[in-house]
Length: 404
Ligand code: ZN
Ligand code: ZN
Image (tube, helix red, strand yellow):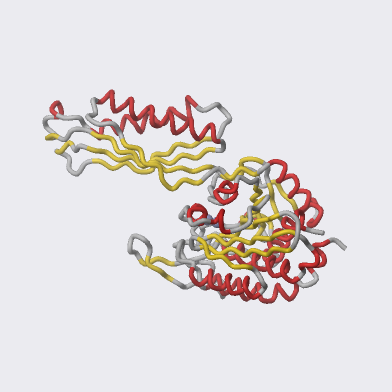
Protein backbone atom coordinates (compact mmCIF):
# COMPACT_ATOMS: atom_id res chain seq x y z
CA UNK A 1 0.00 0.00 0.00
CA UNK A 2 1.40 3.40 -0.96
CA UNK A 3 2.16 5.75 1.94
CA UNK A 4 -0.57 8.18 0.99
CA UNK A 5 -3.22 5.42 1.05
CA UNK A 6 -2.32 4.78 4.70
CA UNK A 7 -3.07 8.42 5.51
CA UNK A 8 -6.20 8.53 3.37
CA UNK A 9 -7.88 5.79 5.43
CA UNK A 10 -8.66 8.62 7.87
CA UNK A 11 -9.77 11.14 5.22
CA UNK A 12 -13.52 10.51 5.73
CA UNK A 13 -13.37 11.63 9.38
CA UNK A 14 -11.13 14.58 8.43
CA UNK A 15 -13.59 15.57 5.70
CA UNK A 16 -16.39 15.91 8.28
CA UNK A 17 -14.71 18.69 10.28
CA UNK A 18 -13.16 20.17 7.13
CA UNK A 19 -16.57 20.94 5.67
CA UNK A 20 -17.63 22.59 8.95
CA UNK A 21 -14.40 24.59 9.20
CA UNK A 22 -14.63 25.63 5.56
CA UNK A 23 -18.14 27.00 6.05
CA UNK A 24 -17.08 28.71 9.29
CA UNK A 25 -14.10 30.37 7.55
CA UNK A 26 -16.25 31.34 4.58
CA UNK A 27 -18.77 33.03 6.90
CA UNK A 28 -16.09 34.83 8.94
CA UNK A 29 -13.66 36.16 6.33
CA UNK A 30 -10.96 38.57 7.53
CA UNK A 31 -9.28 41.30 5.49
CA UNK A 32 -5.53 41.26 4.84
CA UNK A 33 -3.47 41.73 7.97
CA UNK A 34 -6.47 41.16 10.25
CA UNK A 35 -6.55 37.32 10.16
CA UNK A 36 -6.86 37.06 13.94
CA UNK A 37 -9.66 34.50 14.23
CA UNK A 38 -8.27 32.42 11.39
CA UNK A 39 -4.83 32.34 13.00
CA UNK A 40 -6.36 31.33 16.35
CA UNK A 41 -8.31 28.50 14.74
CA UNK A 42 -5.26 27.24 12.86
CA UNK A 43 -2.93 27.51 15.85
CA UNK A 44 -5.31 25.62 18.13
CA UNK A 45 -5.63 22.73 15.68
CA UNK A 46 -1.90 22.53 14.94
CA UNK A 47 -1.11 22.45 18.66
CA UNK A 48 -3.74 19.77 19.31
CA UNK A 49 -2.15 17.57 16.66
CA UNK A 50 1.30 17.92 18.19
CA UNK A 51 2.91 20.55 15.98
CA UNK A 52 5.37 23.09 17.35
CA UNK A 53 3.46 26.30 16.68
CA UNK A 54 5.22 29.55 15.75
CA UNK A 55 3.49 32.91 15.38
CA UNK A 56 5.53 34.91 12.88
CA UNK A 57 4.66 38.22 11.21
CA UNK A 58 0.91 37.77 11.52
CA UNK A 59 1.07 34.22 10.17
CA UNK A 60 1.30 30.88 11.92
CA UNK A 61 3.60 27.98 11.17
CA UNK A 62 3.48 24.36 12.34
CA UNK A 63 6.64 22.30 12.58
CA UNK A 64 6.54 18.52 12.93
CA UNK A 65 9.95 16.90 13.28
CA UNK A 66 9.59 13.19 12.57
CA UNK A 67 13.05 11.71 12.21
CA UNK A 68 15.60 11.90 9.41
CA UNK A 69 14.71 13.00 5.93
CA UNK A 70 13.76 15.98 3.85
CA UNK A 71 12.20 19.16 5.15
CA UNK A 72 9.05 20.15 3.25
CA UNK A 73 7.19 23.45 3.63
CA UNK A 74 3.65 23.84 2.31
CA UNK A 75 1.89 27.19 2.21
CA UNK A 76 -1.70 28.38 2.44
CA UNK A 77 -2.75 32.05 2.42
CA UNK A 78 -5.55 33.13 4.75
CA UNK A 79 -6.90 36.58 3.86
CA UNK A 80 -10.20 37.62 2.30
CA UNK A 81 -11.14 40.56 0.05
CA UNK A 82 -13.22 43.76 0.34
CA UNK A 83 -15.99 42.29 -1.84
CA UNK A 84 -19.70 42.00 -1.03
CA UNK A 85 -20.62 38.37 -1.61
CA UNK A 86 -23.32 37.80 -4.23
CA UNK A 87 -23.23 34.00 -4.52
CA UNK A 88 -26.57 33.51 -2.78
CA UNK A 89 -25.12 30.45 -1.02
CA UNK A 90 -26.71 29.48 2.31
CA UNK A 91 -23.28 29.97 3.92
CA UNK A 92 -22.49 33.25 2.10
CA UNK A 93 -20.61 35.91 4.07
CA UNK A 94 -22.66 38.87 5.26
CA UNK A 95 -19.79 40.51 7.14
CA UNK A 96 -18.55 44.03 6.62
CA UNK A 97 -15.45 45.83 7.83
CA UNK A 98 -13.85 49.27 7.53
CA UNK A 99 -11.14 49.40 4.86
CA UNK A 100 -7.94 51.45 4.94
CA UNK A 101 -9.69 54.45 3.38
CA UNK A 102 -12.32 54.38 6.14
CA UNK A 103 -15.11 53.01 3.95
CA UNK A 104 -17.46 50.24 5.09
CA UNK A 105 -16.98 47.31 2.73
CA UNK A 106 -18.30 43.79 2.41
CA UNK A 107 -15.77 41.08 3.21
CA UNK A 108 -15.65 37.82 1.26
CA UNK A 109 -13.39 34.89 0.61
CA UNK A 110 -13.58 35.73 -3.09
CA UNK A 111 -10.17 34.22 -3.88
CA UNK A 112 -10.70 30.84 -2.18
CA UNK A 113 -8.12 31.25 0.56
CA UNK A 114 -10.60 29.50 2.87
CA UNK A 115 -10.12 26.44 0.62
CA UNK A 116 -6.36 26.70 1.05
CA UNK A 117 -6.53 26.97 4.85
CA UNK A 118 -8.99 24.08 5.14
CA UNK A 119 -7.15 21.72 2.81
CA UNK A 120 -3.76 22.42 4.34
CA UNK A 121 -5.22 21.84 7.81
CA UNK A 122 -6.63 18.51 6.62
CA UNK A 123 -3.23 17.49 5.30
CA UNK A 124 -1.63 18.59 8.58
CA UNK A 125 -3.97 16.42 10.60
CA UNK A 126 -3.41 13.33 8.46
CA UNK A 127 0.37 13.82 8.54
CA UNK A 128 0.21 14.06 12.34
CA UNK A 129 -2.01 11.00 12.72
CA UNK A 130 0.27 8.77 10.66
CA UNK A 131 3.80 9.59 11.67
CA UNK A 132 4.71 5.93 11.17
CA UNK A 133 4.14 6.36 7.44
CA UNK A 134 6.68 9.11 6.77
CA UNK A 135 10.03 10.48 7.90
CA UNK A 136 11.51 13.99 7.87
CA UNK A 137 10.09 17.38 8.84
CA UNK A 138 6.74 18.75 7.69
CA UNK A 139 6.06 22.48 7.93
CA UNK A 140 2.55 23.74 7.06
CA UNK A 141 2.77 27.56 6.86
CA UNK A 142 -0.30 29.82 7.00
CA UNK A 143 0.40 33.25 5.51
CA UNK A 144 -1.49 36.52 6.06
CA UNK A 145 -2.01 39.41 3.64
CA UNK A 146 -1.43 37.85 0.24
CA UNK A 147 -4.01 40.08 -1.43
CA UNK A 148 -2.38 43.32 -0.37
CA UNK A 149 1.11 41.90 -1.03
CA UNK A 150 3.43 41.97 1.91
CA UNK A 151 2.27 39.02 4.00
CA UNK A 152 5.03 36.71 2.78
CA UNK A 153 7.71 39.39 3.06
CA UNK A 154 6.28 40.34 6.46
CA UNK A 155 6.87 36.81 7.74
CA UNK A 156 10.40 36.86 6.32
CA UNK A 157 11.10 40.25 7.93
CA UNK A 158 9.75 38.93 11.25
CA UNK A 159 12.41 36.23 11.33
CA UNK A 160 10.88 33.24 9.53
CA UNK A 161 14.22 31.92 8.27
CA UNK A 162 15.73 31.69 11.76
CA UNK A 163 12.52 30.41 13.36
CA UNK A 164 12.03 27.14 11.47
CA UNK A 165 14.24 24.38 10.01
CA UNK A 166 15.43 25.23 6.50
CA UNK A 167 13.11 23.52 4.00
CA UNK A 168 14.49 21.65 0.99
CA UNK A 169 11.47 22.62 -1.08
CA UNK A 170 8.26 24.64 -0.76
CA UNK A 171 4.84 23.94 -2.25
CA UNK A 172 1.91 26.32 -2.73
CA UNK A 173 -1.64 25.64 -3.89
CA UNK A 174 -4.35 27.93 -5.27
CA UNK A 175 -7.94 27.22 -6.29
CA UNK A 176 -8.84 28.56 -9.74
CA UNK A 177 -11.63 28.16 -12.31
CA UNK A 178 -10.39 24.68 -13.18
CA UNK A 179 -12.60 21.56 -13.22
CA UNK A 180 -13.22 20.30 -9.68
CA UNK A 181 -11.30 17.04 -9.26
CA UNK A 182 -8.39 18.31 -11.32
CA UNK A 183 -5.02 19.83 -10.44
CA UNK A 184 -2.82 21.87 -12.78
CA UNK A 185 0.93 22.45 -12.87
CA UNK A 186 3.25 24.39 -15.15
CA UNK A 187 7.07 24.48 -15.18
CA UNK A 188 8.90 27.82 -15.15
CA UNK A 189 7.22 31.24 -14.97
CA UNK A 190 3.60 30.71 -13.89
CA UNK A 191 2.42 33.99 -12.35
CA UNK A 192 3.77 37.37 -13.46
CA UNK A 193 6.03 39.68 -11.52
CA UNK A 194 4.10 42.85 -10.71
CA UNK A 195 5.64 46.17 -9.73
CA UNK A 196 4.05 49.52 -9.03
CA UNK A 197 6.07 52.72 -9.35
CA UNK A 198 5.09 56.17 -8.10
CA UNK A 199 6.95 58.77 -10.14
CA UNK A 200 7.07 62.45 -9.23
CA UNK A 201 8.24 64.87 -11.91
CA UNK A 202 8.86 68.56 -11.33
CA UNK A 203 7.82 71.57 -13.31
CA UNK A 204 7.86 75.24 -12.36
CA UNK A 205 4.55 76.78 -11.39
CA UNK A 206 3.25 79.94 -13.02
CA UNK A 207 0.09 81.65 -14.26
CA UNK A 208 -1.73 79.77 -17.01
CA UNK A 209 -1.54 82.84 -19.22
CA UNK A 210 2.27 83.03 -18.95
CA UNK A 211 3.52 79.50 -19.70
CA UNK A 212 6.85 80.91 -20.93
CA UNK A 213 7.70 81.78 -17.31
CA UNK A 214 7.37 78.21 -16.02
CA UNK A 215 7.83 74.56 -16.86
CA UNK A 216 4.49 72.83 -17.42
CA UNK A 217 4.41 69.45 -15.60
CA UNK A 218 1.17 68.48 -17.38
CA UNK A 219 2.81 68.66 -20.80
CA UNK A 220 5.84 66.87 -19.39
CA UNK A 221 3.71 64.08 -17.90
CA UNK A 222 1.66 63.74 -21.08
CA UNK A 223 4.83 63.32 -23.13
CA UNK A 224 6.04 60.68 -20.65
CA UNK A 225 2.78 58.70 -20.84
CA UNK A 226 2.94 58.53 -24.63
CA UNK A 227 6.67 57.82 -24.77
CA UNK A 228 6.32 54.93 -22.27
CA UNK A 229 4.03 53.12 -24.73
CA UNK A 230 7.08 52.61 -26.93
CA UNK A 231 8.77 50.32 -24.39
CA UNK A 232 6.66 47.23 -24.99
CA UNK A 233 6.08 48.07 -28.66
CA UNK A 234 9.73 48.87 -29.55
CA UNK A 235 12.07 47.54 -26.86
CA UNK A 236 10.64 44.17 -25.81
CA UNK A 237 11.29 41.24 -28.11
CA UNK A 238 8.17 40.27 -30.10
CA UNK A 239 6.52 37.23 -28.49
CA UNK A 240 7.77 38.16 -25.01
CA UNK A 241 5.01 39.10 -22.60
CA UNK A 242 5.36 42.47 -20.87
CA UNK A 243 2.91 45.13 -19.73
CA UNK A 244 3.50 48.81 -18.87
CA UNK A 245 0.36 50.62 -17.67
CA UNK A 246 0.05 54.19 -16.41
CA UNK A 247 -2.95 53.64 -14.18
CA UNK A 248 -3.10 57.12 -12.67
CA UNK A 249 -1.81 60.57 -13.57
CA UNK A 250 -2.32 63.44 -11.14
CA UNK A 251 -1.38 67.06 -11.78
CA UNK A 252 -2.67 70.56 -11.35
CA UNK A 253 -5.64 72.17 -9.63
CA UNK A 254 -7.22 74.76 -11.96
CA UNK A 255 -7.41 75.57 -15.64
CA UNK A 256 -5.47 78.82 -15.33
CA UNK A 257 -2.68 77.63 -13.05
CA UNK A 258 0.39 75.78 -14.20
CA UNK A 259 1.38 73.63 -11.23
CA UNK A 260 4.82 72.48 -10.23
CA UNK A 261 4.52 68.71 -10.02
CA UNK A 262 2.88 65.73 -11.67
CA UNK A 263 2.64 62.25 -10.19
CA UNK A 264 2.34 59.10 -12.32
CA UNK A 265 1.41 55.68 -10.96
CA UNK A 266 2.80 52.98 -13.23
CA UNK A 267 2.34 49.20 -13.07
CA UNK A 268 4.51 46.64 -14.87
CA UNK A 269 4.02 42.89 -15.42
CA UNK A 270 6.72 40.56 -16.62
CA UNK A 271 7.67 36.86 -16.70
CA UNK A 272 11.44 37.03 -16.41
CA UNK A 273 13.98 38.87 -14.30
CA UNK A 274 15.69 40.22 -17.45
CA UNK A 275 12.49 41.68 -18.88
CA UNK A 276 11.52 43.06 -15.49
CA UNK A 277 14.78 44.97 -15.05
CA UNK A 278 14.73 46.08 -18.70
CA UNK A 279 11.24 47.56 -18.26
CA UNK A 280 12.27 49.47 -15.16
CA UNK A 281 15.49 50.71 -16.71
CA UNK A 282 13.58 51.92 -19.79
CA UNK A 283 10.94 53.67 -17.68
CA UNK A 284 13.58 55.53 -15.65
CA UNK A 285 15.64 56.39 -18.76
CA UNK A 286 12.65 57.80 -20.66
CA UNK A 287 11.33 59.80 -17.71
CA UNK A 288 14.75 61.31 -16.92
CA UNK A 289 15.20 62.21 -20.60
CA UNK A 290 11.73 63.76 -20.88
CA UNK A 291 12.40 65.82 -17.74
CA UNK A 292 15.59 67.06 -19.31
CA UNK A 293 13.77 67.79 -22.59
CA UNK A 294 11.21 69.88 -20.69
CA UNK A 295 13.81 71.78 -18.69
CA UNK A 296 12.56 70.30 -15.42
CA UNK A 297 14.30 71.95 -12.45
CA UNK A 298 14.74 68.72 -10.41
CA UNK A 299 15.54 65.07 -11.00
CA UNK A 300 12.40 62.88 -11.01
CA UNK A 301 11.72 60.66 -7.98
CA UNK A 302 10.95 56.95 -8.33
CA UNK A 303 9.27 54.99 -5.55
CA UNK A 304 8.72 51.25 -6.12
CA UNK A 305 5.91 49.61 -4.09
CA UNK A 306 3.45 46.69 -4.11
CA UNK A 307 6.06 44.47 -5.68
CA UNK A 308 5.39 40.78 -6.16
CA UNK A 309 8.10 38.53 -7.47
CA UNK A 310 7.80 36.26 -10.46
CA UNK A 311 6.29 32.91 -9.51
CA UNK A 312 8.84 30.74 -11.28
CA UNK A 313 8.29 27.03 -10.73
CA UNK A 314 11.52 25.05 -10.57
CA UNK A 315 11.53 22.84 -13.67
CA UNK A 316 12.84 19.65 -12.02
CA UNK A 317 10.65 20.00 -8.94
CA UNK A 318 7.62 20.68 -11.13
CA UNK A 319 8.23 17.51 -13.13
CA UNK A 320 8.61 15.61 -9.86
CA UNK A 321 5.28 16.97 -8.59
CA UNK A 322 3.56 16.42 -11.92
CA UNK A 323 4.59 12.76 -11.78
CA UNK A 324 3.44 12.45 -8.16
CA UNK A 325 0.05 13.92 -9.12
CA UNK A 326 -0.27 11.66 -12.18
CA UNK A 327 0.54 8.63 -10.00
CA UNK A 328 -2.05 9.65 -7.43
CA UNK A 329 -4.85 11.29 -9.43
CA UNK A 330 -4.31 9.73 -12.90
CA UNK A 331 -3.01 11.57 -15.96
CA UNK A 332 -6.48 12.75 -17.05
CA UNK A 333 -6.85 14.79 -13.84
CA UNK A 334 -3.54 16.67 -14.20
CA UNK A 335 -3.72 19.74 -16.45
CA UNK A 336 -1.18 22.29 -17.63
CA UNK A 337 -1.76 25.48 -15.62
CA UNK A 338 -0.10 27.65 -18.26
CA UNK A 339 1.09 31.22 -17.59
CA UNK A 340 -1.36 33.30 -15.59
CA UNK A 341 -1.33 37.11 -15.78
CA UNK A 342 -2.07 37.47 -12.06
CA UNK A 343 0.60 37.81 -9.39
CA UNK A 344 1.43 36.16 -6.06
CA UNK A 345 3.84 36.78 -3.21
CA UNK A 346 4.30 33.07 -2.42
CA UNK A 347 7.74 33.05 -4.09
CA UNK A 348 9.15 35.40 -1.43
CA UNK A 349 8.97 32.58 1.14
CA UNK A 350 11.14 30.03 -0.73
CA UNK A 351 13.31 32.86 -2.09
CA UNK A 352 14.18 33.83 1.51
CA UNK A 353 15.58 30.33 2.04
CA UNK A 354 17.08 30.06 -1.47
CA UNK A 355 15.11 26.88 -2.21
CA UNK A 356 13.10 25.63 -5.21
CA UNK A 357 9.33 25.65 -5.22
CA UNK A 358 6.23 24.54 -7.06
CA UNK A 359 2.94 26.44 -7.10
CA UNK A 360 0.00 24.54 -8.57
CA UNK A 361 -3.65 25.12 -9.38
CA UNK A 362 -6.56 23.31 -7.78
CA UNK A 363 -9.88 22.79 -9.55
CA UNK A 364 -12.97 24.11 -7.79
CA UNK A 365 -15.77 24.31 -10.34
CA UNK A 366 -18.07 21.79 -12.01
CA UNK A 367 -18.11 23.84 -15.24
CA UNK A 368 -14.91 25.81 -15.86
CA UNK A 369 -16.47 27.57 -18.86
CA UNK A 370 -18.87 29.43 -16.53
CA UNK A 371 -16.61 29.68 -13.46
CA UNK A 372 -16.40 33.27 -12.16
CA UNK A 373 -12.91 34.75 -11.98
CA UNK A 374 -11.08 34.87 -8.67
CA UNK A 375 -12.05 38.09 -6.84
CA UNK A 376 -15.57 38.01 -8.34
CA UNK A 377 -18.48 38.47 -5.92
CA UNK A 378 -19.80 35.21 -7.43
CA UNK A 379 -16.64 33.16 -6.79
CA UNK A 380 -17.91 29.96 -5.16
CA UNK A 381 -15.93 26.73 -5.45
CA UNK A 382 -17.96 23.55 -4.92
CA UNK A 383 -17.13 22.19 -1.47
CA UNK A 384 -16.53 18.67 -2.73
CA UNK A 385 -14.50 17.29 -4.34
CA UNK A 386 -12.51 20.56 -4.00
CA UNK A 387 -11.61 20.08 -0.33
CA UNK A 388 -10.76 16.41 -0.77
CA UNK A 389 -8.61 16.90 -3.87
CA UNK A 390 -6.89 19.92 -2.32
CA UNK A 391 -6.05 17.91 0.79
CA UNK A 392 -4.79 14.98 -1.27
CA UNK A 393 -2.70 17.31 -3.45
CA UNK A 394 -0.87 18.75 -0.42
CA UNK A 395 -0.34 15.19 0.87
CA UNK A 396 0.79 13.78 -2.47
CA UNK A 397 3.33 16.60 -2.79
CA UNK A 398 4.63 16.36 0.78
CA UNK A 399 4.81 12.57 0.79
CA UNK A 400 6.62 12.53 -2.55
CA UNK A 401 9.54 13.83 -0.44
CA UNK A 402 8.75 12.41 3.00
CA UNK A 403 7.07 9.06 2.37
CA UNK A 404 8.75 5.91 3.66
ZN1 ZN B 1 -6.59 36.89 -4.88
ZN1 ZN C 1 -5.64 34.18 -3.96
